[in-house]
Length: 174
Image (cartoon, rainbow, N blue to C red; front, side, top):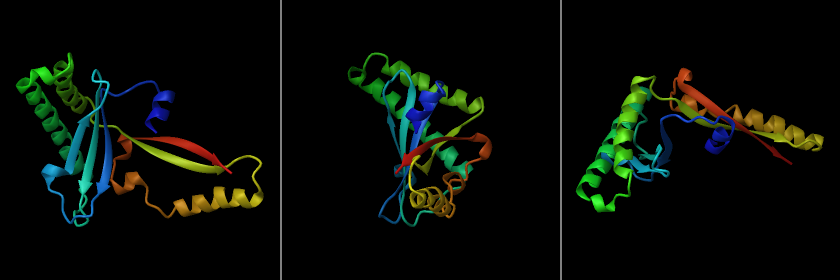
């Protein structure tokens, strides 16, 4: 979805965090182990991947609480990486340490200047032109009807509509 977005809207936010929610087959995940961050390439951009892990007995967080924890954990990750660079400067590539310091400032600036915008992928299936009537009914109508019974991601994660941008892709199938 992100490559589709960038191809059609050639502008990026100052800080990008790709979040994946994982349910684990354990009862509880501690807060210290819940958010796992990785800094992505290219390092001249502030791009991170975050895996948020939940156990089967963990209760989902309200949106404001989740967002606050995500931001604080990202800042802690950036500070930890910065400390690692200070302790082991030979492991750092040129420009990495400056990039990490810049990222910390970008996170603070992004929060001051409007906060977080959420991009969510949305897909649609349609029958290709020339499909039989039965295929068009099955794909166009039945799939849409079944999809209407599933809660949308923005409702599940209680994302404020004013800060949500949905990026859609239409797949034609036969």
